[in-house]
Amino acid sequence: MPARTFTAQTPRWLRPFLSLPVQLSTIFSLILLMVLMVAAILLRDASGSNALLYPTVALLALGGIVLSATFTTLLLRPLVRLTDAAQAIALGDLKQRSRLPPLHLPPQDEIDRLCGSIDEMVTRLERAEELQHAAEERFRRFFSDASHQLRTPLTSIRGFTEVLLRGAKDDPETAQRVLTLMRNEGERMTALINNLLTLSRLSEHQPLKMQYIDLLDLVKESIEQARTQATDDRRMQISLRGEAPFGLQANKERIKQLLYILLDNAVKHGLPAPEGSITVQLTKREQQIEVHVIDNGPGIAEDELKHIFEAFYHGQHQRTPGAGLGLAIAAAIVDAHQGHITVQRTSDAGSDFTFMLPYTK
Image 1 (cartoon, one colour):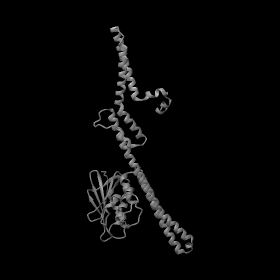
Image 2 (cartoon, rainbow, N blue to C red; image 1 turned 90 degrees about the vertical axis):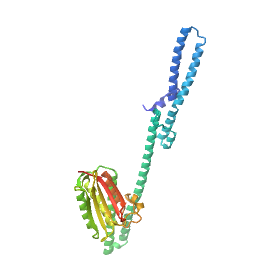
Image 3 (cartoon, rainbow, N blue to C red; image 1 turned 135 degrees about the horizontal axis):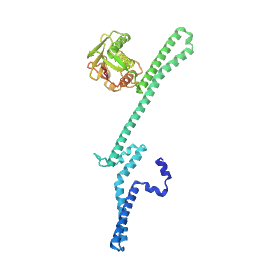
Image 4 (cartoon, helix red, strand yellow; image 1 turned 60 degrees about the vertical axis):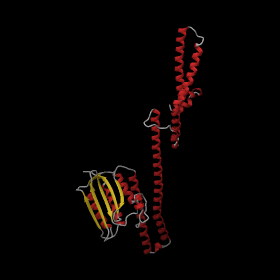
């Protein structure tokens, strides 16, 4: 039976005895009375005189009860404070941890250990509350940015539709140009939605389908793809530090997407030919494979480095259009593979995107 139901059914005259100090004082008083009664019986039989015996026993009993109640209350005072603070904390007021009794290190008794446990619990609750607020703030910002990004192509499509309805459809050349623009906006919105879905799936931390892959082969394939997408003949090369193979257990399609994002970013933000160059450096270590995607472009401002992997983040010096989801997806892919990704400026002011993944022999 729940404690709340039991309290409601308890007779009113019995409720004061549910208090732990009252219970302990009552038990100690009863024990003291029993001891005094036994002592009185033994003394009566021994002396045969009862004139002062019973008043003395009564005074001793009264004094014992008072002392028992006093010492019990004093000893249980830290527990009462702890109970009051715990009840306030349970109601959501985490600031009431200041009412907890002072914690001794190392713990001296059970109350110290209980106080330490509750204090640690409150610390974790505060941390969880901070994480929850941060997650809610990220979600609100993410939702706002996503709405803004989707509103732009939708507004454009609606505007193009109104142009067609006003008579542009009667002019084949104008209608063809407007329909082409509408298709481009539709493709842009489709790509944005697909990126949002990809980022959402990766953020759910669902296990990926892994297989053994040779990272060097994927890098070669990705560089060839980047060459076909580049509008110039800038240099693209691979640098190896360690002997092949560069094998690991990973999701092949996600790793290809990761390499595509980083190389596409290097192509868009790096210097064009003939000065421009992109280097993919693979380093094999004992426990992981380290991959650097380096360009010699103008680089990223120092105050923007810590935000570069945030969704929908646009740097102040961004020169190319985009929703700002690519690097956020790249970071999510690396995180899904239990890896780590960073970015830093190179010595010649370029950008060095580095990710590390667990190595498989």
